Image (cartoon, rainbow, N blue to C red; front, side, top):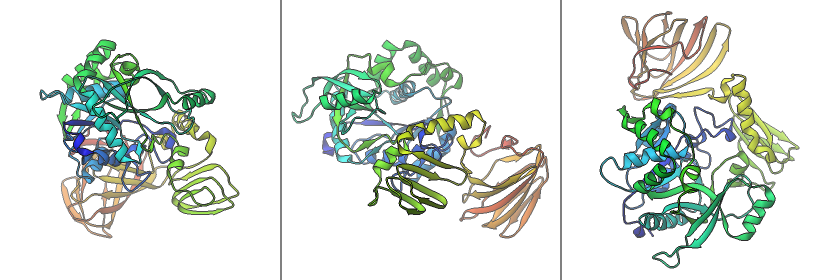
Length: 482
C-alpha cells in the first residue's frame, strides 16, 4: 500500500488541546496529548509514529501552546522525530492554526499536501488509516479539501456528523469517496440513531488533507479577516531556541474558529473519505474505558487496585492503593493530589469540575503535584504557613536559570547525584547528603554536571512562596516567565 503514497505529504500535528474531560490525569499544563493513556508512548508520540515510516513523508509541523513547548520537544526527541514546532501564544482553534502551517509549508516555494491530524486520537487499524491517506493524497492533488469520516458502529451523541453526497470517481475503482452534503452538530439520541440507520452519515474525525494553497484560498474567501490576522502573526514571527513563535499581538486579535465552520461547511470543494479504523478521540473517561481490555466483570483496573463485587468500572490508581466494594458503572481515578469518582453515564461532565476548580482559584485545575520544567521536574511534598518542601529532579547536563527571590530563602539537600551550585559569588559542588543555604535576595543557580539525574530536597521558608517570586537573570531555555 505504501507505494500509493508517492508524493510529498507534510504532516501537521495539532497539539494545542486542553483535555479537560480526562481530569485529574489531564490538566491544563499537562494535557492528554502528552500522556501515555493507551500504551507505552504518549498520544502525541503515537500520532507521529503512525505516519513517520510512510514514504515521502516530510518533516512534521507540530503546533502547540507556548507553555507546552518543552513537553512537545522532549517527547519528539524521545522518538527521534525532527519536527518544526510552531507556538501559539493563545488558542484560536483549528482554522488559524492550520493556516499558519500552510504558510510555513509554502515559505520555501513548495505547495505540499497537508495531512492534518489531532495529536490526541487513537487509531487501532493503522493499515486502514494509511489506505485512506493514499486516497486523500489523490483527491487533494485534484484540488479537493478532504475530510475523513468515521464509519459509525453505534449512535453517538458526543460527535458531530458528516452527511455524504454524490460518489466521486477515483483511480482505483475500489476506493470510495463522496462529496460532502453537509456537516451537522452533535445530535440527540433519536437523531443519532436515524443517522446510523441511514448509512449516509459518518462521525466527524477532525482529520483533513488538502494542498496548502487550496486551504489558504478557501480561508481567504470565507474568512478574510482571519486570513489577514494569521498572515500578520506569521509575518512577524521569530525563531528562538528551535521554536517558531507567532506574533502574540496579531494572533490574539485573530478571529477564532474551527476548520469545519470557517471553511469545510462553506466550500464547494469538500469531500469525505469513509474510514473504519478503530478510531477514538478519547474525549472522556468512558471512551478510554471502551479502548481498554476488560476483565470478566467488565472492569479495567490499573495500578494498585483491590476490587470486590465490582462491575463495569474503570479504576486507575497511580499513587496509592484504591479499594472498591459493591461499585457498579463508575469511574475512579486517583492521583497524588486528587481523586475523581463519577458514574460512567456522567463522564462528559468532568469538565464542570474543572470549571469549578478554576472559579475557586485552585491549582489542581492547572497543575499536577509534580510539575515538569525543561530542566527536569519538581514535586510538592509538604507545605504550611511560611514553608514548603519540594523534591527536585534535574536532568543530566541540565541547568536551572540564574535567579533570585524577594520573599523566600531556600535550603538544598542533595540525596542523589552531584550538584553544581552558584550561591552569590561562590560556586560549589555538593554530593549526596551535603547541603547549602540560599539567603533571601541572593542570586543562585543549580546545575547537574553528572551523567545521572540529580535529586535534592528543597526547603523554602518565607512570607510568600509562589512560583511567580522568581527573578531570572540568565536562562538557557529563553524563558522570561514561569
